[in-house]
Image 1 (cartoon, each protein chain N blue to C red):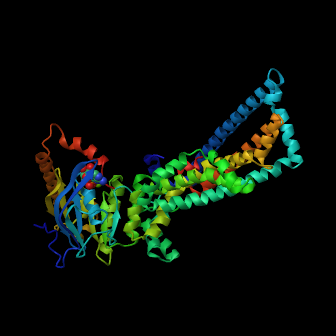
Image 2 (tube, rainbow over the protein chains, first blue to last red):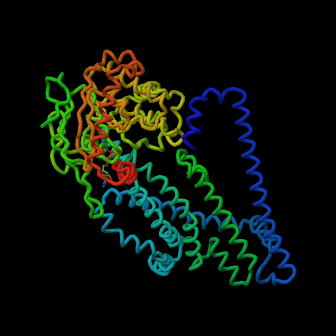
Image 3 (cartoon, rainbow over the protein chains, first blue to last red):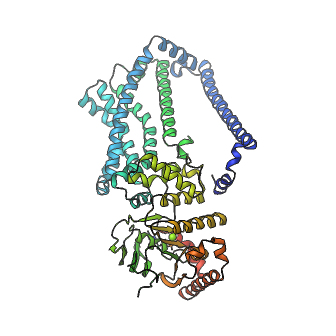
Length: 287
Length: 294
Ligand SMILES: Nc1ncnc2c1ncn2[C@@H]1O[C@H](COP(=O)(O)OP(=O)(O)O)[C@@H](O)[C@H]1O
Ligand SMILES: [Mg+2]
């Protein structure tokens, strides 16, 4: 919003109520809806094109044994859905991811905040944090099998480890990035450290925290399924390995697409929560 | 020598800036922002600091607010040296410091919230303060939905709502349009007149007319590093005259005379202190603005 527009708004505050203002609002809304409709239609078109090309090539020159095809996957999806196989395994993977995600988030956010309030500790820890952040977490898998066995606990730990560093890192950077001018303005109002933390540092870090949460939920799913692929008898990762062992590509794709749906759905939930919690932030609400 | 700012104050001055210098160190470079500033402000008076941008006005205010410590000399407030944040002062900074995640009303009530006031009283007083600056109807907007001028007004409301005994204002009305500016100057004068407790104001501006409109005393700062080059006393434009309104005040011959004198002192200072080829002032100003203190 430009300064000028806003100023015009000041002088014409009344106008929003009269007829021409209402017409303008309606027109703007209709325009936005039309544009949104066009985008959704184009997205569907892209989807249909991809699935169509896949289906046609599998029916003509590509071996469906290797590539499967959308119609087979859809049939399998319905089959597994009705006999409860899919939901049962999905529930396991989701439980592991969500619990791991929650544990990772709580640890990451609290450590990030705690460290950000201590500048010296931050400086001392920075290189080690960077090293852990850079470490490919998959390599920890075998270690966790030794430590936690091959049951659900190991997958939860995997999911938590996959997310904790990213969430920690985002929280830590966000809390350190806080505008010193805002902090000073509260100090001048005689606010103590706790009030400054509550009223300035936390809210300003929240944008970063949310971005961290959003980016890391897929990582939690990844951690959980990798854990399942390493060793398991249940979960989406188990379906993938089990189907692959039987050269059942349709089963593999069905599991993969299910996971994708879930990831997208959870992402939407996080984005909507973010848009609601960070109404003031244009970048967050525009998502 | 202290430039004594007012002749009407028998008690010791509220703010004493005692031979204060400030040198910034950044990337191995020294910038002398303020050189040997020496003045005082009696309780209940209004002091304006004018001068080209980059001459250390914001730095001086930050030191009075206790956000910065002088390199040399000392700032005393109500008799004691300012060594940490000065809570007696409400500071309206040059760049607004509204919390972007709080709606306008919650921003204005923030100082009262910190004082621990009852929620309803707090919101009522914040709403009153908003009305005073002409922003009723915008209580539920977020700061980023307002124009620069409107944000300044919210900040003014937030500073006034908790009645600090001193008001530090850094180019408060700089980005406002002419009509609004006059209205707010008028409001501020009315407020100065009606406060039961005397309000002391240090106002930074580069609008000479604004300085003469609002202040009892104007200090002109200029040169590199900046010094106080001129002190203009305005006791002939006393507060009783001001009740007639800002526009009437500006028509007085004394008014133009003061503005003219400030103008001349600035010209003289920039002419002698900046022997550059071409237009020294306009060449220096943009570069200085970019590195300024908040
Ligand atoms: N934090 C800082 N670090 C280094 N130099 C600074 C800083 N703040 C201001 N300065 C320099 O100090 C001088 C005075 O700045 P400032 O007080 O902002 O001037 P004004 O408010 O009069 O425009 C300028 O040369 C500016 O570049
Ligand atoms: Mg400044």
